[in-house]
Amino acid sequence: DWSSDVCSSDLKGHFIYRIGSWPNLAENSLKYSHVLFAFKPFFFREVKNMGYENVLWLDSAILPLQSLDTIFEKIEKNGYFGYRASFILSEYTNEFVLNLFDVTPKQANFIETKEAGILGLNLDSYIGNTILDRWQRAAENGGFYSSRHDQNALSLIAYKLDLKKFEDSNVARPSEIENITKDSVFFLDRSMSYWLDKSQGEEKILKVTKKEKIKNRSYRDFFKLKTYKRNFLKNIKK
Image 1: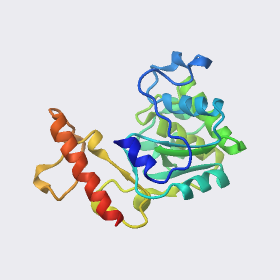
Image 2: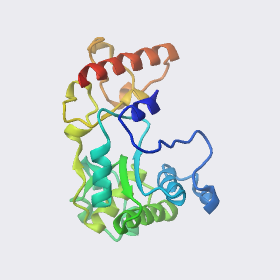
Image 3: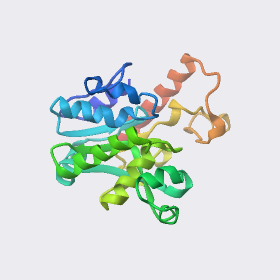
Image 4: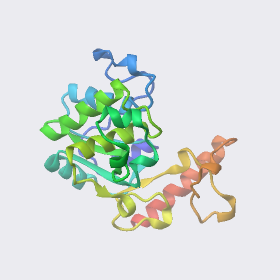
């Protein structure tokens, strides 16, 4: 399963995941449960309160392909780790959210977005805590109220803090199996939300378009595809 992929990447630490409920209930975060993707900053807050320092968030669609040691080294050194996305902020946000961050629509035309599916924070550092504080505040004050919710808020925070160490995701985090190389660290497994395009044949992975969303999938077909992909990834690693 997904957790075994993370643990098999020679993780030296704890793997924490939640099934149901809501993170950081002790600090009354449940009142923000209606905010899409607000669980991410609250989960960071919860593990910080548990005493963890270097924390890496991975969406459930992210599969590690190699050691995570270098990622945690970057988190420790820089205070954060993440990837740049391939689109401009103005395409997916609105003036309400921009006003919360004191950013104009014209400025948004030149702001490169950051991915929120892979994010590392050093919660023992000033910059890591500043990112978390502002991200959580955005979840609480309406800063997640745009089409890319947590991602747009994170992008605006990175812009205001002038964070330059977000990395290129094209090679390090491919979403197509044929794009995996020896330098790929993660694989974005879109089969969570999308289904196989039959025209591609069995040797091809997913063609990711919104029109291919799963409507009537069976568990048998789902796990057949997952097994096929896992075997493919193992062969790539060799």
